[in-house]
Length: 303
Image 1 (tube, rainbow, N blue to C red):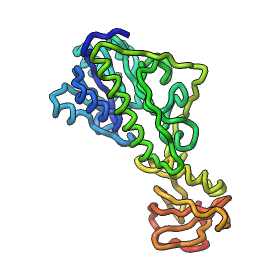
Image 2 (tube, rainbow, N blue to C red):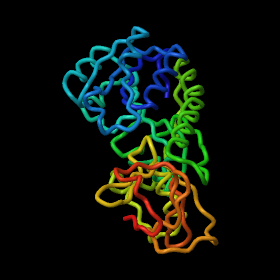
Image 3 (tube, rainbow, N blue to C red):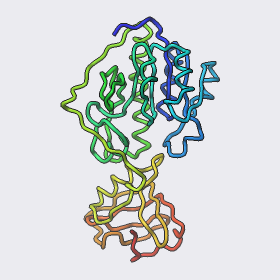
Image 4 (cartoon, rainbow, N blue to C red):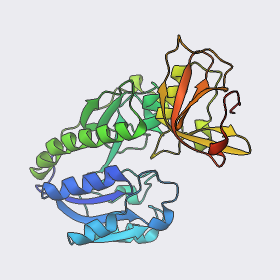
């Protein structure tokens, strides 16, 4: 696709990937004419929230807060700026018409999987759970879900002991590499597009905090994977202890040949960590919080 040199760009976003993209647009001296920032009042359930407005104002980039991306005030702001491209990065809200049609050459989206595989929601958790492969993928938005032609893509590996925070750091590194390639090309007026192979598409369903509930009647590696997949900045895996939740943020597998016990029962307590039996093997809980954490005892049951 042929663009004007130094195309006029607006960025909309709300999280770490949005802020990183904003910084890269400025670093590459792109023609950034506006920033749409999710209001902090709407950030309660947004993991990794970043308010883009203060950073934009620091560099004299016009910016506005919004509650809903498709509201009239956002449309008026974007219409006034006459963008060639609208970047929508790290925003769970869907951009719809007529806003979607304002940017002359289209709207750029981002997804952290190896599209066309892994379209949809909750990508970080699903990657650790082994259901999607990681990549920083920038693409043109179309009427489908993460289905538009790809501008740039950088793979990264999800490794055996990665936690959610490790994946987020890998995503950020991959984003930087992709943007360091495509933004200079955009400044030259060039935009190379690669259509997705829709026959290879897979879809990730939305995950909720309640999906972090541990089933101790699973093998230790499945329990360990769930803990890593839901770790901060995500809500965390959990079980139940006495009258309340036991939130679990970090764990270490025990030797699966060494420990045998009833699933969910505490086998051992060592300093500030507890060993809990799974259907196969056991796992050390090392970073957790509970209202009655000082009363753990060997032989007690979780869940």
